[in-house]
Each structure stands twice: as structure tokens, then as C-alpha cells.
Image (cartoon, rainbow, N blue to C red; front, side, top):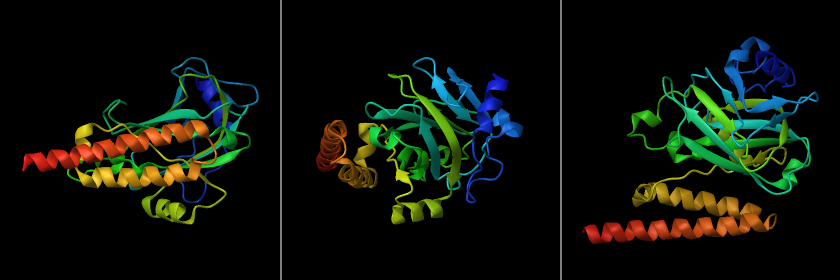
Length: 247
């Protein structure tokens, strides 16, 4: 497995200037990068061998402000036949990955036809950087895990993986550069979380923005987006009704 990891890391290009120092995922730091149920092809593509394939970045030990955005440059061996859902987990020091610290993003089949730079604004996630009164959600991030789609076998060449801080993330989202494909991160929150309007309102705005960007690209995503919007509206109405009857 170590030899496989080293061969994989040789294929990764140097990170951009704003990337975290030493997080280059090259052979000297191979202990920071590991694979599970994923093998490398002779061409340098990483292929999942089961429905539970993932790669892990460890020993990050950076604040959430420093790890606000995740940038990936990916090349698919074969373009996706339909949108693919990737899960992303994070954990603090001395903890394990769990369903309580998880989100997902969707890569559209159109974007998988060529080598593409993707950007995931992790700081938009409530469970990742929200709730300043909860110290557990403000601690350091020690590890990050990216899970392949569980319902398909795909081969991806990771040209680079890098992180950007909060200020750079805000600049990227504002400029909406055509060279960088923004991937909206989604998370599953309990219904009780939407009792607070400071959770429900940002989620509604983010969903509207993402949906409008994809309406003309993908009918499957359109259906998913409409269902998501309906769910958010129901939760908001429920939270308002809950507050009204409490009085």
C-alpha cells in the first residue's frame, strides 16, 4: 500500500501559492495521505474497488478558517454518464470520522469531460464552521476524507489538492472565475436546527444560488433542487409555527 501511495503522489502537481505549506501530498509526506479500497492504474488514475472507497488526508492540524475552501484539480478516465455524489468527512484531533461531521458535493457529467479545477467552500457548511457557541465545531481540523460515489466505479487522476483560507474563499466566490468550477457543499441537518432562522435563511439562499446555476444543465439536478427547496420551505414554516405556538 505504501508503494501504491508513493506512485500516486508522484502524479500530483505542485500546489498553488495560497495552499497550506507542506500539504503537498508528495512522497516525503506519504503518511499524511492514504487510500482505502482504491487502487492506482498504470496511467496514474485512482479507481475504487468497492462501494466504500475513499482517500484520507491526515495530520493537517489547521484551523477551520485556514481550511475554509478545498480546491481539487481532477481528470476522469471516462466522463461520468450522470452526476456523481462525493461525500466529504472531517475530524478534529483525537476523534474519528463520523456521520455527524459529513457533507457531500455533486460533480456534473458535463464537467467531467476534461481536466477541471473544482472548488468546494467548506466554510458554507453549518456543521463545519457554524454555531460559535459550540466549541467542538470551532476546534482544529486534523483530518479530511473524500469518499467516492458508492453506486459506481470511477477512475480519477488527482492533479492537485489544496486548501485556501476564509478571505481567499470569499474572493473566489465573489469573482466566480470561469477557470474554477464552484461545487456547492450540502449537509444533512436535523429539523430542530432550522428552528433558528440564522440556519434556515442562509441555507435557503445558498440553495437558490446553486439551483439557478444548474437549472439549464441537468434535469436530474433540477428535480433534486426542487425537492431540496420544498424541504427547506417546509422546515422554515415549521420553525416559525413552532416559535408561534411556544408563545
